Image 1 (cartoon, rainbow, N blue to C red):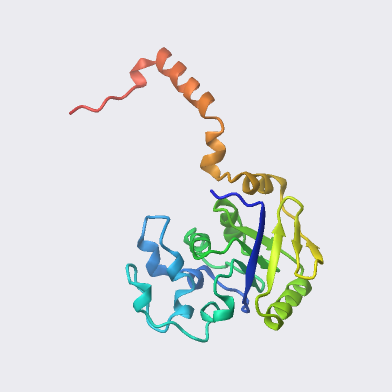
Image 2: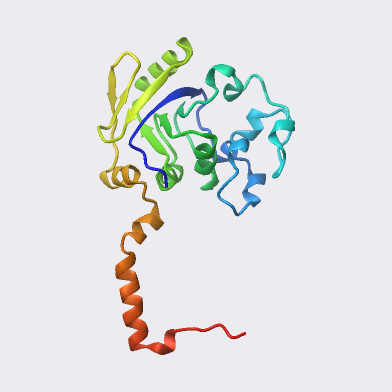
Length: 216
């Protein structure tokens, strides 16, 4: 998993409440068992005028010119600001996969759905909860100033605005540790690789019948 330390990125505004995971990545794309390739289908039903299906060439589709991520001023955005209850709906982990693979590193909102919030941390995305008034101010500034960017310093737990003002945010220490070190659940387990291998070797030495050998 990619580490998150300090990130500066262009901000894109998702000016909707209760954005659910089916809007983030529609159900037809859940057929894939791979963890890659979901970026082109992020917000698919809002982003395109035609219906999307797995395996389509995105360059041959009809983009919706009114959708925020299709507007040139937000091209390359890596910080998303959203309204309350972002990520509600089903628990599909494909939603943070799609956001990450599109290029987003952080999402700022007044509130998130619990399962989506947890899945973000497991996939290297930083969801930041701020008071609704602070988020509204970020929306106003993003709309007012093309090229509006934010710097997010996870170690210091602050968002630095273009004028130098800082907004502090909270994060659980364990989640902060995992993001700073790029550790997902597998990475956390592999920190103990030597102990796991030693345990397996000792167990097989004492109980050799536990070993299985494929028979041709």
